[in-house]
Length: 282
Image (tube, rainbow, N blue to C red):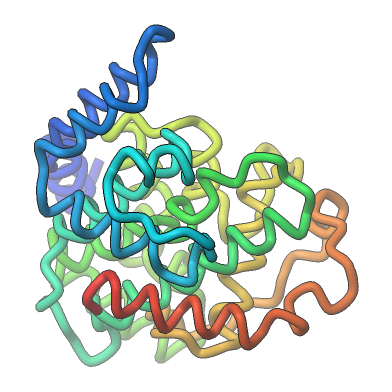
């Protein structure tokens, strides 16, 4: 194992865990006797999280007809899992330094891109007929978390990969393998394991470039894959990539999106994106 990979692996093991409020909320959700009030009491212990959850819940992202003015109502209308995912999203956004800017990569623009992927992933999941799209928004937001980790913990090597990718018209994954010996999707998967995120989310982070898990389309990974390509095309933020990807034709087998599913929602998606950027203070 080369020294750069050793350094990265060590930093992943020592990286911040998700906040106590997430752990306690997970425990509450695992107890069949728990009530909405039990979950609300846990979340209310973190006032910063409460404020952002209410802001997001009242944004066009969810399109709720009723005003959400307390955590109990947010849980009732959005569900336990979606509120938990919002806590994770808010926490992860706060874990990474937004000042590690170089010629090719701007963390703030990358977060904007990632939020676009989250919004479009959720939209695709709904269009694909997925009954529960709770994990789609969060997975889209953190799909490329490995890039941010490299920017923060191996900035010199990451800059070299970006330069190499741009100069040789390669995907960042290809450049990372040549320069570092691993790539951001593997690092993202290791972070997901470190945070004990669900397997489908971990699979999507590792496989979003193709939408295939073990050579088979998987709906969450496929949705994030298409959302990634669409977000690039819509120029929401910046992915840090030289190459604009085209969707893998095999993912349509599982998504079966109607003709115009994305085109017809362009204005709605754009409005949700702009509001989300404001809510997450980007």
